Amino acid sequence: MLISKAPDLTYSRAYINGPCLTHPKARRQLVENDSRQFYIYPTKMLTSRALIRGLQSSLWRSVCSTSALQGSHSKVVDVIDCSVPQYNNRLDTPLPDRPFVKHDQLSAEQKKLKEKEKASWKSLSKEEQLALYRMTFELTYPEMRKGSDEWKTVLGGVFFFMGFTGLLVWWQRVYVFGDVPHTLSDEWVEKQTQRMIDMRINPVNGFASQWDYEKKQWK
Image 1 (cartoon, helix red, strand yellow):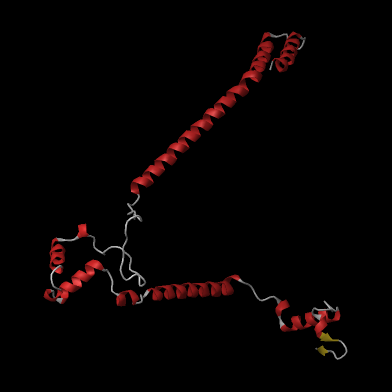
Image 2 (image 1 turned 60 degrees about the horizontal axis):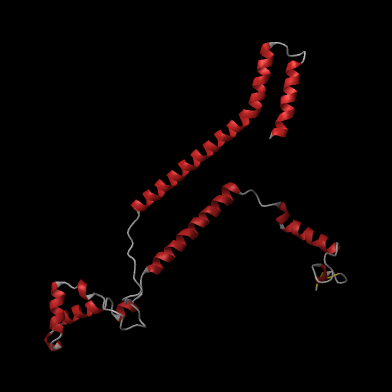
């Protein structure tokens, strides 16, 4: 820094003592210009750094406030503990790992029915037997094998998008696309084919190899 400043100071002193700047105002202006040369750029750098830090801090605050707001409005999701037995309706698992209704979730009537279950099943009615079954299993095998009507929704969605696509293509054909190019007409294609035959395009294994030039017909 000392080596770079010395030539500037020498030049400024020589210029001040010269005949061109003998007036005090001119000397004062030159000294101010020299001081600006040394101090204006560090000031700008400090200002820009402070501005960048302020923008970074404001951006970080907005991100933190947004994440906190999203966290406060998020829904509570039940977490399944896979380390304990789970109940699943599966055709290949006739006996799940645990009953459908846990013991601590039984109501007063269900607890009485469970005590009655310990006696003879002949004393139980069909409704009570069905209630005991529903406490152990959620669905029966016929209910699990029964198909759903979800295919109707899927098929309806497919038809809807196909119809919308057809309407879009029709609209483009009528109002967007222009006329068919004349090069696609039968007459033009015939002339183009004859031109390719005359030019013997790909005579080995390509287009012209399929044309018999002696009989003037396709092989």
